[in-house]
Image (cartoon, rainbow, N blue to C red; front, side, top):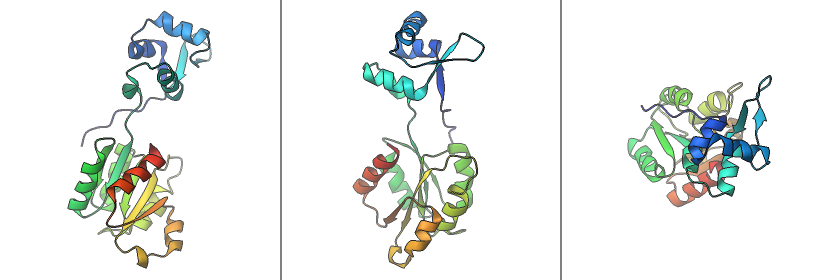
Length: 191
């Protein structure tokens, strides 16, 4: 499995100069003039710019290389049907980094390494119920950022709405899933 690129929380003036193809002095001038928000490292004169502030600045001034700054959103597909999981992966990989898992155990392992922004989770997994996975692992993680969770099932009418809401799932999708609807919902949730 490929190791995902680290997400950066801040950038130095040198990093910004390389991304924007300008000198460090130009970046410092942007900061001093208030065009680019920055903060100073306590006890020093070095400046840092958050990823969000840099993205806003680059977008506002039409500076290219923005895609290098903003990592693609990550989606973990958890479904024991390899054909369905492959269909979702193929449908989403043009815009997102997508990884699949066939069991809850495999999903737990991949969650730690991949750190997805969204999990597409089948309710009926071979080892553990998808609702239990959502309730105890995905949404119940102490201190960690919980991803958005879309649960999917071909047995939607059998599922109690109480069980869905107790699980912490954000969205329920009935199988077969409309790819156009799925893409629209994902864009609305994670971009």
